[in-house]
Length: 122
Image (cartoon, rainbow, N blue to C red; front, side):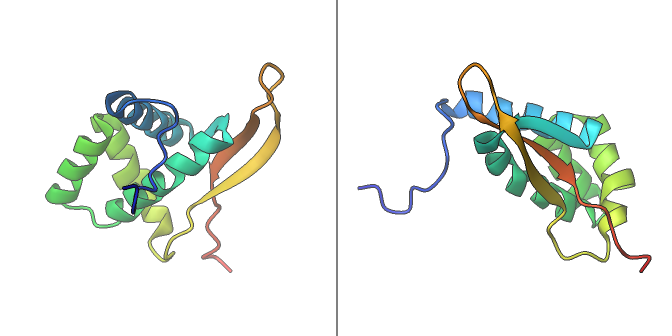
């Protein structure tokens, strides 16, 4: 039976999906934006938001969890020292998906996933 099987597979097996996720997360945090297809952006958005929320609590356990999920110490340092502190007062919704156009080859919808600007100064 297919009860409660709602995870997206993106046409990949488990190991390929895991490596795609880690690579998308690394490049998103490195450049603070990501240009990709709509399906991949919707797949990766909750992962990124969870990592930013996790990074708000800067301690050893959080650092080890982030290293495990991203496979990168530099990405973990970016999350803990640069990105998460900007969103201390925000309760979620750190990213935004903006549609650009359709890709010419296959017609897939291309989007840009970006960080939302923080409005705490108002």
